[in-house]
Length: 368
Image (tube, rainbow, N blue to C red):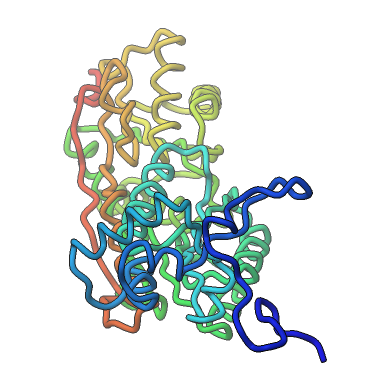
């Protein structure tokens, strides 16, 4: 009759003492795994207590936590993730699909999310979609197959298949960087259209009427579309228009911002006196190209952006921009996802303020 793994035919446990099991054999030159019981014995607690401490569930004293942590470190114990997931029906892993991994604002957000999850004992899987809906769907499927407990998405333009998959699998999710109180989907962020209106209203109040945009690619990007819509609405409210000739769409990079301004300056009609970048990288590219072209910023051309990345305050001239509370967005998104995983109530529509930060890159338009 076959023997159960780890037991002799007599029914007694056949695992040797820990000191012997840690001895490296000549054949494998590998350590036999340390068990949860080994940690419990060294810490002088039960295996159930070790499990609670490692999973950060239930109640335990700081002294107990310290003893377990010391035992884990001394023995080099590594929990078996697959076994733990089977036992708890949780992997204690959250996924995040970000639009672009090389964008500094998104990197800050991912770091804030990871910090929040770590405090509750969760790990993070990250992927970048490059604003491609089909690629995002593939990444979500891969994360679901790996057993994630929840996922953070960016924006609210996702294929229906994404939502259907998450609902079928009972996986909590939240859309970030966006806020819509009427959305059927959980969201944490700000109103991108209103933020677009705010930056345009500021330039209009300075006296600018010749306003243009170097916007992000709007296809598949609701944030870019809504920012354009906000700028357009602000101009229309004052009897002005944002013609298509005054908008160029480019990927989010400094070099694309430079190319965007060159394209605007080649177009017929009055030269813009103010340019709004779809994000700070584009706006910084506009500043650099303006300076290269002999246009002083802000005396000849005012420039504003979105995001408030670190470079925005340190470029010369410093950049007027919309400050996006990225750390708060992703921390609160992490709060929501952890609460949902653990069956606790949580706010599923959270609005934050994206405020205007006025710096040196904007001023009144030049006299004509």
